[in-house]
Image 1 (spheres, rainbow, N blue to C red):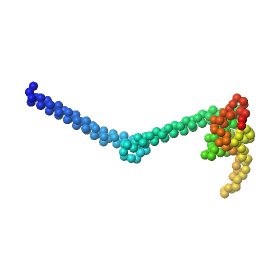
Image 2 (image 1 turned 135 degrees about the horizontal axis):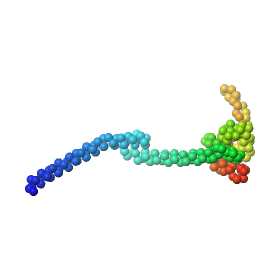
Image 3 (image 1 turned 180 degrees about the vertical axis):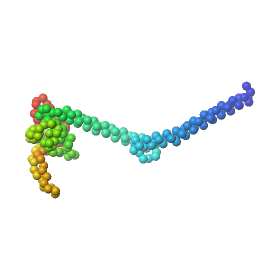
Image 4 (image 1 turned 135 degrees about the vertical axis):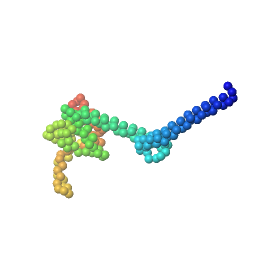
Length: 195
């Protein structure tokens, strides 16, 4: 092999490498022009980030992760409450009915933890008759600390007279947490309330 043959082969190899390099650069340019903006747009949408810099994505991803963890925790709490309600939906004993009413009150409570539970709502959450719902109002008020009776009365409003029916006034903070309230009335001693 002569020196000229060696140079020709070297030139051929260089030309082949230049063609491969051009093909790689073309493919990289296509990827950069099409795929990266698509990926950045997708991340912006998922993370709710308006910025242009890729450097903003890790912080936004961390924030999203925290939000998801908080939602998971809240979901677990709601599922636990739902489990308690499902257990007492078909209450058969008086104690189970009282537990169902207290669970209903806990779920209905506003931010200050106080709520009125009417006989109609008691019928809905326990499946008892109208008459027995009124009996439960009296029994719950007698047996459970933190629960009072609101007697039925009429209230004068700007548009006329509004009738407020008899109801339980439940102070959920005093009745304790939902689980304690339910356990208090599902004990083997027949649901005797302990104060």
